[in-house]
Length: 378
Image (cartoon, rainbow, N blue to C red):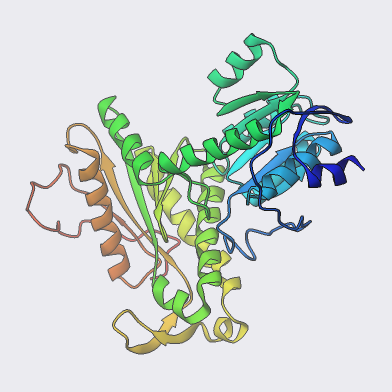
């Protein structure tokens, strides 16, 4: 009965699972939507709905229901988890734009969930808002300093919770946000990461990855499968980095372009592994007949109909260092040049910048001093 009452009026404050206190003011008008129990699979229909997805994690079913109802009324998509282990599993599978996280959870505590999500490159940048009964000043400060994006205590005001969620999502978008397909940060964060490494005097490799013939694939199979191909590349990068146990920064420039910053000694093998994993994983996104034929008929970028090979990815690698890279922009330009050279070889290739110093401004494209690596298609 109380849920039905809630649907008619949100003029309440949540105190506990069964205790609601009327509030004196008239709540703002809400647009109600049908509550769905759909579990989106990001691989089968990735980002088909651009509406932000919020994962609500709480072991109290009534809290989950009321929060989900409010956020869906605000036009957001919601999924839920009732324990810490399922929260980690669902966050990795769904890559939500925000996680509302209770601290007192069975199986894994909220702090355990937070640590695992921040440790995994696939979920490291997802905003996390704590929603908990731990109301002490010390708890708030500790969790915010640890990297939490906001901290809401129970009992909570529904309108305030909604406003804090919207503000966190808006802040993420304003600061460059996370790509909804990959969950990775974009251009501003990539530039900042490279500039910080140069400022610290570090030497690092920059890998620029780009899907070969992506536009013809997208035009031929449709944008939904095109999005799935981008997700497949993101997952290939995640898996390769995890297998290499390398300390890296991952960024999604946009579209089908990705950047990996890693140690110079790891770059070539890491890039080759991404190329190999993607070639295998992308096969399932082609039609059966195209897989059997080893390619498909489509128009290329010049509008000429031709036979294209199965999806592959090319990578360009350069090294950034204070003595050879005057700026983050110079590193990015050199990596893009290497990527272009890799793609010119026919796809599924890795090109490595062997120059000892950055080219002078206006010197044009450098000579090809790169070489193919195992794992690409030759």
